[in-house]
Image (cartoon, rainbow, N blue to C red; front, side, top):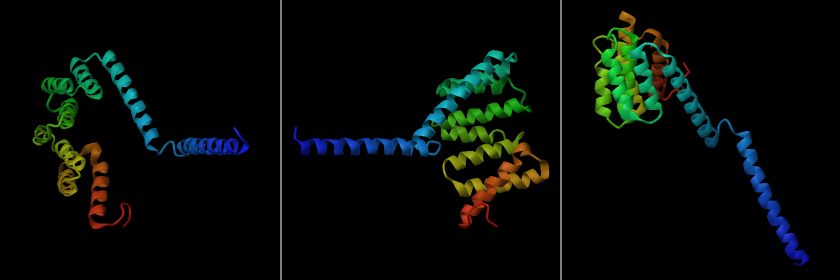
Length: 196
C-alpha cells in the first residue's frame, strides 16, 4: 500500500470515527428529549408500574381490590381480554356508590378502547352518568381527546364544569378539567395556551 492509499484510508477512518463520535455526542446531549431516550424511559416506567402492581396484588387483602389490581396488571402486560374480564368482575362486586366502582368502570372503558371496541368504551363511560356524572363526562372527554375530536371534548368540558359548579361532581379533577378546557379554547381561537 503506497502513501497515497494510506492517507485516504486514514482520512476515511477519521471521517467515520468523527461521524460515530458525532452521533454518540448528539445522543448524549439530547438524551432526555430524543426518541431513543423516550423509548427507554417508557419501557422503564412500564416495568416500574408492573412491579408496583405485582406488589399491590400480593399485599392486597380485600378481594375486590385484589381483583381490580389483577385486572390492571393484566392490562399493563397487554392481556386486554383478561383485563376486561377482571374489571367487569371488580365492577360487579364493588359498591356502586364507591370510588372502586368508578375506577373499575373507567379502566374497563379504557381497556375496551385499547382493544379497539370504541362503541363499548363510550357506552361504559356513559353508564356512569346517573350516579357519577363527573367521572362519566371525564371518561367521554378523554375518549374524544384521544381521537383528536377537540370540539366534542370542549363541549363536554363546558357542560361538566357548569354541572360541577352546581354539584361538585368533578371533585379532585376540577382544576385539571379547567386547564384542559382553557387549552382547548385557546387552540380553537388560535391563541397560544397560557396567554390572556
